[in-house]
Length: 137
Image (tube, rainbow, N blue to C red; front, side, top):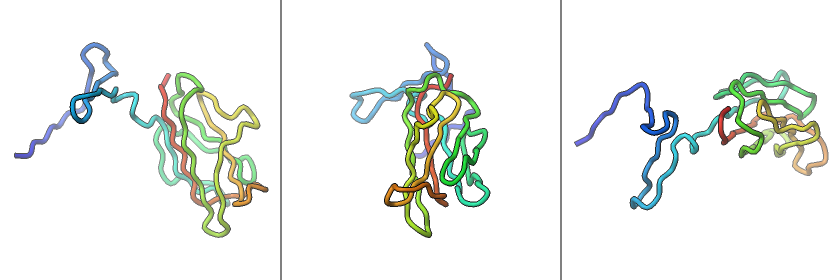
């Protein structure tokens, strides 16, 4: 028999924002809050850059060919968070990687460079995705 649970808010008993989830086999627990993606964006980096969809992203800044700054709506607790970056160009191939040229990982934003397949020059890629896992401030 299937069940449906409809609620607006989940709150932990000992810590309001922390809920433990027991894993398969009842052997481990995972903190639900820690496992959630805290920010992500999918954007077109060609021409006038534009987001396709986002979560916790307040804006994108075009810093020139293949250079983008991604600002968070809600800052992270520190700059030691995990991030995943992917990008491709449908016309010429290419990759997207993190740049640290301008101190690009902060609690409020991350800077990204798009490079050609040979990683020899900046290039605007049309399919870019960034996701961030960490603690919100």
